[in-house]
Length: 458
Image (spheres, rainbow, N blue to C red):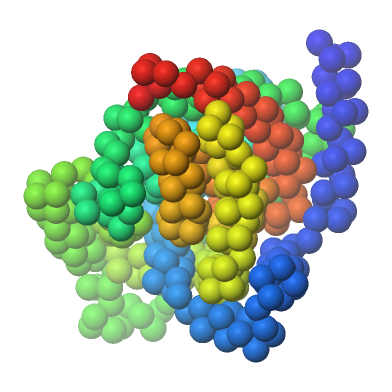
């Protein structure tokens, strides 16, 4: 086993080291992608520089609401994770792995299961779980390579678009959606909850769960988490505060419990009327409710929030750049051109696979499942109608391509890295290996589904 371990390490270490040395940090990557988008729209779509600038600048604010949702999610979840009760729970979970391979596999598998139910929960769980498992390992003297642990948490996101919160399948399952004339309404029982989709999701998740444990480096190359003991210390009450009449109220649990109960009451009424449907807003208010109920006082709550605000900074500035790229891709018609070119080279049997590959490429520029479906979906749906291809296959093909290249797309890693305290270069070597493995497993399985189209696929 030791010989096999060292062989795998020799095969993977060069790629990991290459990524650590040459993979750009987040903002350099974003700037490079922006410049590539500018040049592509100019040369391939014959879009004038003036129009490119206008499309880019006018689109920068298009997803500010989404940016705020994601920033709130990171801040609130970070605060929740550092309440006393959640710290105790996370510590117990973190101490579950009794070996190195259990630690890596537990994190990836757990995040994958959570992402299958709700991708926002999975993003947060990944960062928190990886950090707590690493902390527990340090305390017990177990050598855990922290970058690989975080990369495993990131890898668990690879099946999110096959599950309950999948953007494209949920869109086409909605009554009166914008493509209903072309597509009709496709219930999720024909997309997400088909035997072939569930089987592919299980195969990908189990495959990566096994693989991630074998990627661990030899002990002398392990980079362990550095624990900052001050991170968990609360600010002491200053002497001047004790003489303020309002200080007792600021340090009382009653106020946060009252507002927490109000939030909880809202969620109960909402779920009773609309069912258990999760979106970013509901996830945020649920986390905020728990944080308010578990923190010691309003002062403790603000202390937790202030410490978590720094984690949201990179996200707040990154999302407008991606919004600008999306604006150029859609306004110039470049995304449509790419989709059309892919669709034209496909046959009836290969169309879903071509849609899958096309989605992988487009996702690098439009890293949003919903936005990508709106650009790519109409073209491939029209092609599927003319070729007699099962529409659920097209829907899931776009979903598969979108989720797969998320592993090499920094945008989806920003919240997780903010919580874990790492940079892109630390995890992208391992993430690329997981991407290749997922591509082989998912691509092979999906090809078998596509080439056996009959009445059993729906």
